[in-house]
Amino acid sequence: MSTAACPSQNRRKDQGARSRPAPTTSLTRRLVWGFLVIAAIGVLGADFYCVCALSYRLRERTDQQIVQTHRLRLEALRAGRDWYPSQQDSASVVTDARGVVRLPTGATPPLGRLPMSAALLRERDGIEQPLPVPGRAARALVDRLPEGGYLVTARSTAADAATVRTLVDIETVTAVPLIVALALGALWTSRRACVSLREMSADARRIAEGSEDPSERVPVTTHPPRELQRTADTYNYLLRRIEEAALRRRQDENRLCELVEAASHELRTPLTTITGYTQLALIRALDDPRRLDEAMGHVQKETRRLISLVEDMLLLARLGHGGILEQRPVDLAQVCLQAVDRAQAPGAPRTLRCEVESFPHWVEGDRQRLEQAIDNLLANVLAHTPEETSAQVRLGLDGDRHVIDVIDDGPGIAGSVRDRIFEPFFRAPHPSPTDPDLPQCSGRGLGLSVAAAVVTAHGGSIDLEPSERGAWFRVSLPASAGRRLGSTSPQPLP
Image 1 (cartoon, rainbow, N blue to C red):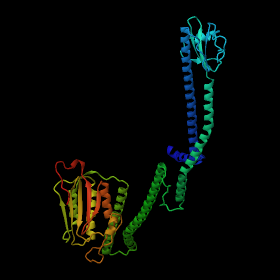
Image 2 (tube, rainbow, N blue to C red):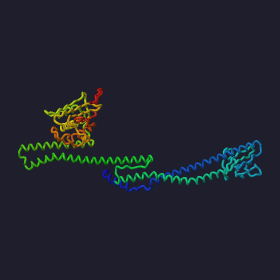
Image 3 (cartoon, rainbow, N blue to C red):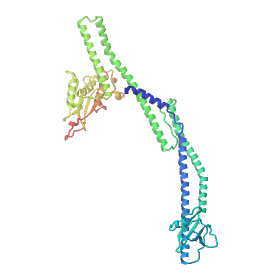
């Protein structure tokens, strides 16, 4: 049930993604608004800090002046000296316990009559810090006198408040133009930064629509910002990967077409032979027992050839898709010796030799497939060299890897086809087609490709080494973990 519901759910998700409205706010507008909000918060925060700092400093200066004046007048009263004269914007009075002013007599202090009741005087007594006066723009300090009265020293804060209001007015007048100027600067900068992004988007759209060469890359302006340069580099890297993927896909399609064509040609030959003899049998043209036995022999031969071809193609397909082979200990020395024995025909003028260095050669793998790989390499020698050509199979160690060299003294392989020698159904042109000593090639073009696939599946590698004469194939396989040499120090192959 869940499997059946998945397609409809995916379609609903896709429809929801397509119906989702596109963003209507441009990147430029978002940058401007974001910068404007940040600038406004920064400017207003700085203005608020300046106002608070100025207010605090003015209040601190006023309190210092009040405390200084209050101490001088208190010392003068206690010493019996004359009344300390009033200063500008400050005054000191002596009241009785009810708050009635006793000193100075006659003259009105600069702050006028301070509206401080007896209860407020008793509450403020002993507090060393000046406090605001209720109903008046002033701050006052109160101390009780020995005879029962109070000394009250006050100072006006009207000038301080006016200074703070002036600062607020100045900040208000300058903050608005400053914010507007910052917004315009942010708009200009964001538009200038987004020009390259718009150009990149337009170029990418033209490339996607096919109006430009796909190999073109997105350009950037001279001395671009680091982020913009990284964006352009990433986008160009993506375009390059897309181009490489498209090229690989075309190459794979071409290779697949060639493979299908070659496979069809190889399959057509035995099928044509089998079909021809079958038709002859149906029309009773093979009544002679000798001719019938000969025809059935050809049918059996072509059938085996057809089965071998199909099995090799299936093996290539399975190994190409990560197929797992049998993993068992295999002695490569026995594999090589037996392969040479099978390839050496009795009485043939060709000389095949096998040389094995004197230490064990164990690998983990599929013995049947490894034998098939070595047989294919030797079959390639038999099919493409004259009958009197000598060849040898050398088995040795190179570090922690087993190396099998298959070397012949034949005409070799042309340099123009060395890169394609391991492709399926590829047949290299004969280097000397007019030489009558060379055998006619009847192979299927799968031997080397199957050998390469088997060796690769075992974690090894196969290469065509450069040689002055003949062909030199080198197979390298990892040694078995449980049978690697301990104290023996292997010598590398010459």
